[in-house]
Length: 56
Image 1 (cartoon, one colour):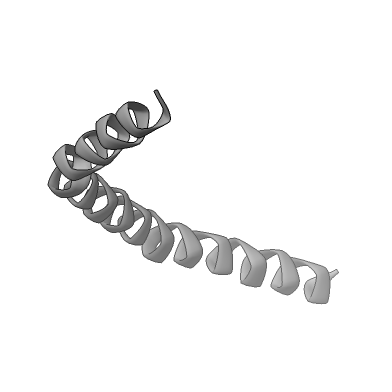
Image 2: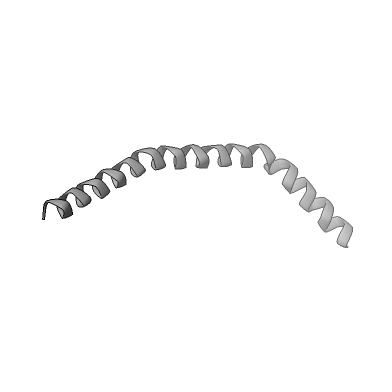
């Protein structure tokens, strides 16, 4: 019984550690992706317009 409790405690701590490390990391990745999209968005729209014009 003690061993089972120790394993549950270990996995609980591991889960909390994963959340504490993973969530800020995920937020940083989302923030960087959003900033990159805002930076490249005008160029992407320009390329789309050029492609649409060349297809006509």
